[in-house]
Length: 73
Image 1: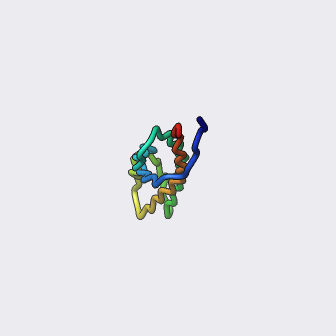
Image 2 (image 1 turned 60 degrees about the vertical axis):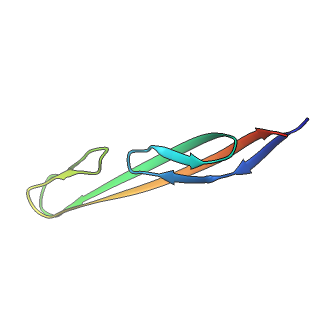
């Protein structure tokens, strides 16, 4: 009996919720980075990447997820 470790597909949302498509037990870890840029205004970025600004505001969400599948064969 051995332990098999493989990489599976992981879909990461901006909510830091990962959905893994695996045939075995899967553990998914995600890290999200939120960057909010405002022009001549004060901007607040929430987890949903919604910006509250007086003027033009651009909010970017970058999600990096790592998914590992572990199965017993």
